Image (cartoon, rainbow, N blue to C red; front, side, top):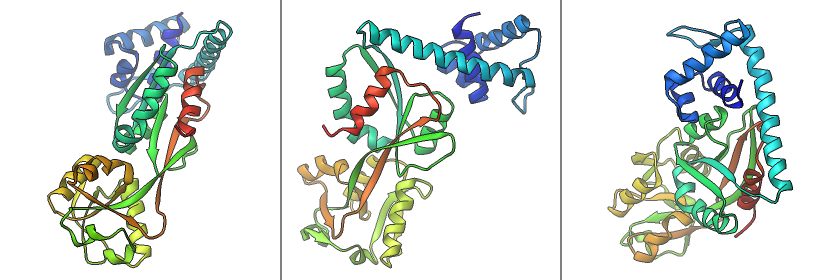
Length: 292
């Protein structure tokens, strides 16, 4: 019985998907099925109830999963400790991030981390916020990066920075001449924003409503790049993290107006509670928490 076989069973128990388990372990779905069958033959019991509609562990499968998880965590801890003792600092870090953090906040950290620790490989996936949570909870990735983190019983949340929110508007917009403005002044403006279910959109709406402003959205998107393009062509104004529009402001395709009163977007690292992080993963978390 190999460690890799235990990992396949645990990944399947957590994702409840043969497809995702195969992707995580870089094998075929047939190989996943064969691994399960081999474990069932070895222990002479069924581990999962096979059904097209539902996935469920049997009682024996639940016990197998819980003890296999402990073995995997001990194995990871052993590997990490042996590397430390040998002065080796290498490994893989799999990160899922929302687009705005991945495109604007993360690159400088990754570049510096790779210069300091060239033997560590960092793999980055760009996802919607709900997918980041799913990937972390399903053990598809090691770390997740989100804005306005949502507390969940199975998650550890580590704040690592705050983005200053500003108003983005076309250079010819009347607001473009201002250095600062109050949120109340946005009453009656047409807005471009994120889709309603996204955390940043919910936070922006609350900010505006607290100041008596009911935003009228003319366009809604799931990523910051499309939001910026819509503002550039004059569709409306948008409240966005300052870092995301620096390039457009420099090229004068967008204007930036600071808000009277500081409004920040909190960013956080999320990990699955109880997950054993390797030394490189711990170092990367500490790296993100420290200013560059």
